[in-house]
Image 1 (cartoon, rainbow, N blue to C red):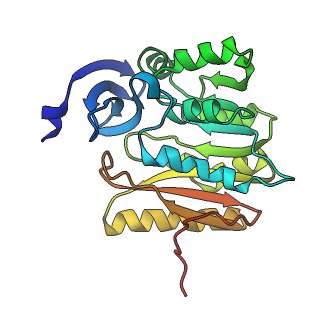
Image 2: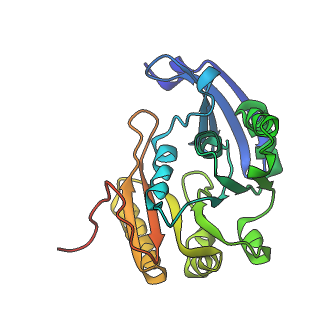
Length: 257
């Protein structure tokens, strides 16, 4: 069955980065999935119904690897997410980890409106408020680098999920950016980045170039495969970087023997 044959509905909105499509289609189990699509790339998604807070994409689920760093004397409580999109991971994180406090930076207020209207961000905010925990989620509509420059907060983890189409803008993955990230990480804090690598020599070079820059900035860098068998059109990887040495499970060996 082709993509168009599976399409149930589609809405289009104008955003800072062009037309954004909200698509509804069934997954392999026949469940209805709402997908945020921009520039031909799936940016985020939500299951409909009772599973509204579960992340359909594998790479969102793999963000949870950062919690493997928790120990008796170390917890992951304050997290910063750059790139809100459809708020798939915030819904999951805030409903499954009740001590989590999350700041989300999304540059386009229109995307936040779409997330409230179509991707259950409004329900998340309502449920947090009902429990008297509305202050566990703060949303900032501004550029990620501008936020880092003005903020004085430190975080246990910072997640970079900033995308324009299928690529991360260069200014969100260079040495200047990583220096700003380190200024806002608590001791033993973790930086997490989602990367899409196409299956080409150029794609591999870009991925390893990023790994080299991360290794210049941090003492330890790990990589996890987060490719989605159903919705992925390329390989997704989760990069975890820290000055602390954490034994993350399922990491890939990208070094020479």
